[in-house]
Length: 102
Image 1 (spheres, rainbow, N blue to C red):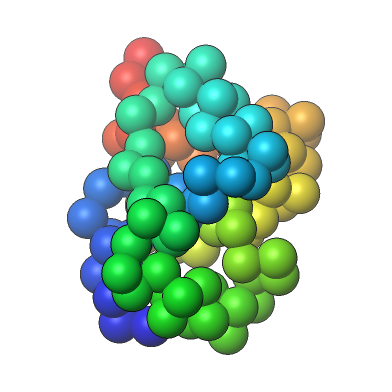
Image 2: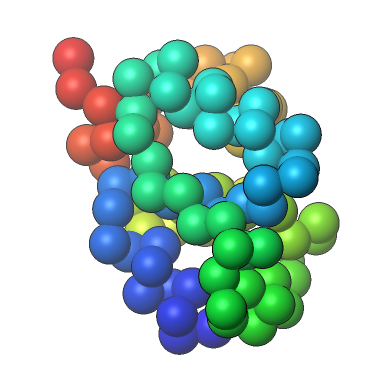
């Protein structure tokens, strides 16, 4: 869990994904469309990916990916991020975390 928290705190926006996950791809595309350049950690390409996946699950992320952190804080999974986008607060969260500038 320490590795997940450490990686999540290194950039304003961080997404833990798997390369074969379509929802992961959609969330990454959403962030890029908003002008953010998130740090993306693909668990299936990381030697400690399985360990990080279990840590994400223990943090309450189910399914484990995509798992999104903004400003070092766990935001949630795809459903949570899409809800924030629909209600208009995702962009402001990214601005507040300095993941995007306006």
